[in-house]
Image (cartoon, rainbow, N blue to C red; front, side):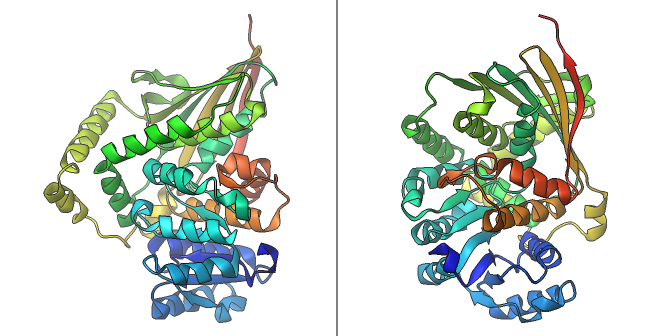
Length: 396
């Protein structure tokens, strides 16, 4: 039984950049009440992380260390069988993630990650979504800035709207900060696998059931000025709208007819043009092995923004919800989105799975499906703001 495991939460990838930040947050947040462990492939580096964590939490000076490697299934099996919840920050997930998911699905271990990779998430659904309920495993992806502010922000907005009516919500994302080498490596890898990702997504669409008597759809539009976003907006085809729409298909509270549009907010039309040209150029270069290798060599995994750079970073996601004669503007905001707040989000998600009374669900789940309001409450207490900015009646 998972309740009888040696640990409540284990962190795989604690020696990496984001993994280290996650370990620090857990050390400060968990106190001595959580039975935790650190896992990775290098015992010496794990010991160095533990020594650093003891400065935040003296009780963690003797924290258990588990050597495990994504290329060693036996080590991952032992790791998964030792803990109730496993956090993994080891990416790119399309390269290193599946063996960890496989071990958790087989062991009945709850799993959380920071994946923002649609191909990986779809492959997990195809291969493990049906197996996980046999063991009771909850497989929850995208528990960082991809996609908790957006998934839970829409859930929060829906909660301010009338029930049983068609709802239309638009999200406008504004975020700043420098990304890490690991994030860069993941992005380039994904750009080089667009055809594979499209094929896997098509297979998932073919096999995944859709809700009966309800309609859920994504919407897109042309770049335009949007006063609510404070500038220009462009459609943002990240994994975030996919996660929102999956939550909407699973949860009746989103109404009989639900639509969602996801946009990036930028300051000017010139920025819109620069984003388009820059993204198109990187996608083109990522399609062939020589140029993809060149791109990957520009940034090494493991480095990241300094504490001073993270201190200056902020994010804000505004949502406009309309339906049933009501118009609502909400906002989710916080500090450094990619690292400090992401470490907070994935840690609180893992603690939520370990400690809170949640719906009896299993398989591949979104954060809104698995944890919903419980996780909103945790993140609000931890300093991420969920706010209603405006609520008005509409005519007609």
